[in-house]
Amino acid sequence: MRRPGGIHRARRFAAGVAIMIVQGSCIAPAAERPEAPSAKPIAKPTAPAPVKPMAPSAITANQRLLTQTGFRLAGPMIQGGTVIGSVPAGTTLLSFNGAPLPMTADGRFLIAFDRDAPASATLSATLEDGRQIDEVLTVARRAWNIERLNSLPRFAQPSEEFDRLRPAELEQINAARQISVNSTGWQQQFLWPVVGRLSGMFGSQRIYKNGEAGSYHSGSDVAQPTGTPVIAPADGVVILAADHPFTLEGNLLMIDHGMGLNSAFLHLSRIDVRVGETIKRGQRIGAVGMTGRATGPHLHWSLKWHNSRIDPLLLAGPMPVVQ
Image (cartoon, rainbow, N blue to C red; front, side, top):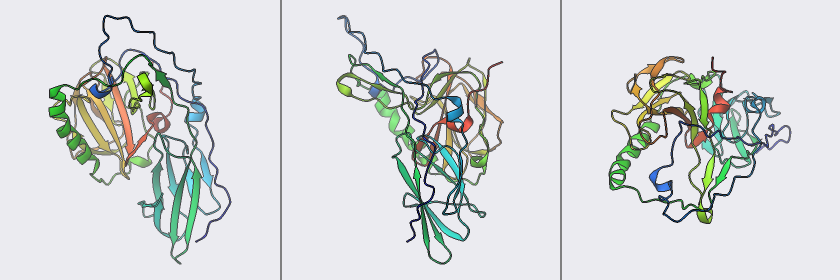
């Protein structure tokens, strides 16, 4: 097995992402919302430690790297980031962290790093002559925005209705994510489905009483009035179009962009496409709403690559200026 030295570096981004708290964002599921306060006054929550925002130039830096092993990589190698690559000449098999990884006929592939991805990842290429080439990638860590609410408990009692409805909803979501489609949308420059004010940022998290951590925010929230058109960020195929509002997500739409990368659009007031429909980048797919659990009208856009949650801001770039 060949383990060359060479270039195994990725640009490190040490700063985190600041969250803007404005109207129109997701609220925590019942299992993570604190109990209603009693008549007894509650101590003021401890303010979160200051977090330096990540500069837009760092977020959108499209790092390009030709390694000494022959891999070509383009994209931010950082937690929540996606990278498009091509294999060394003569590659017949490819794997990522030990799992088989598909590639196109011309050797292109997609990888991504979860919000909590470890500091390194390994690409392995098997060549025609049987040799294996390993490329160890350095994954830059991020300082996430953490809000500490030390006086509030994490758990609240879910309702009987939630317990009754939720298993079937999760079954539909998980089944949709098992669908494999033939789309090249993953290779495109992604668009923002809605242009507007960011009211919730990927990766932010609350820490409750006794250090109990809530689930981190899985996507980007864009606050806009109900009825604002939502467009497809890239080509793809519809894998789920809810026929009724889900308990948390409301009217939920999911589009697969190929190579295991899919988008989910939550809280829609309307869904304009159907399951199995091929979607083009920029096509209208629905409208902003506040169905499900939301504090105001907004779009929650989340991305997953297989089981890894991806930061939309790293894929679509800075939010365009609202005219």
